[in-house]
Image (cartoon, rainbow, N blue to C red; front, side):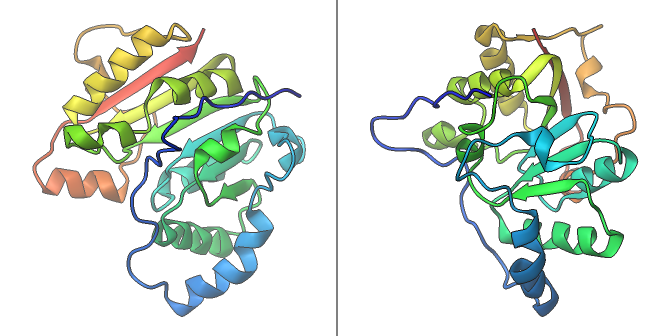
Length: 233
């Protein structure tokens, strides 16, 4: 098992997320934070072997910034033979997913409720088959672009933990962020992008179900999304 350090900014680490909490958790969610979350939280005090987190998992999936957890919970439900790691810092989203896990009795999800940079730093090479970044915060103002998750040092870590031929899916409804991501991916030299024809990136992934965020975006008039899929070369 090997891992590499993520290059550090001389001015200190820059979190790609903003606030960690919004509305106060209701009583049921607070109870789950105190009881269920500790059982599911990935321990990063030592190198993490994702395969050891789940019994005989065929594949390991990692979703970064899962929001309310709709996609993560559905994928875990539809693929019980696989193991899923979800990384999210927003307490409201964590609370919603914990409720789903509790009600459904899900056993193939582990959670990391902190900055994904810390998790990636202790993960071994080629340990993940599928990685998802779906509708991340676009940080639209130019002065905030440094907070965007997609940047070269993070893509290098994504490439490192993905197995050769592994899949990286990125979705956004913000065209500027779509262009930003493609520009970084094409310069990273670690991913292949096979696109059949112009505009095909607007077609959702097979079996896709819109998240609440995506439904809200449609109501607000953002009618197009970009669904990119890259392969680890």
